[in-house]
Every structure is written in structure tokens, then in C-alpha cells.
Image (spheres, rainbow, N blue to C red):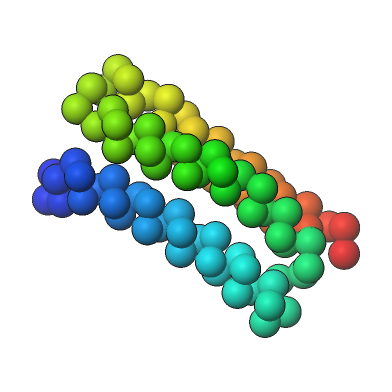
Length: 89
């Protein structure tokens, strides 16, 4: 964030989330991922919420903590659901 600045870092975070979810969709449509990989999209609303929390609390480190927790939660849930999609096939 030092080189990018806070605002650009938040935008990069949002873009990275969008690209990650787009890859899941693309992977299912190209049959690289199993159909159940769509389950990994379930935390998408939480990812959007975290993005807006991060934008709103960018100048207050204490208020920014829920956005960080949410980002870890989104990642953990998505990876877990993606792994489960391979198990249930």
C-alpha cells in the first residue's frame, strides 16, 4: 500500500476479488472446474460488503479491522467450498 496509496490498494483489492470470482465462473463454464464450484460464489455478497467497509473506513485503522477479517473469511469460505466441489463430484 505504500506505493499504491490507500485508495488504490482498496481498488486493487476489489479488482482482485472480482477477477477471482470471474475465474470461478469461467472455470465452470469451460468445464475446468466441476459444476458445484459455483458454491464458491456464495461469499460474493460478503466480499462486496467488505469492499465498501474498506472504502468507508480507509482512514481509521481500528474501524478497518472488520474489513480485514471479512477478507480472510471470504477467502477461507471460497477455498473450502471450491475444495468441497471437487469432493462431491
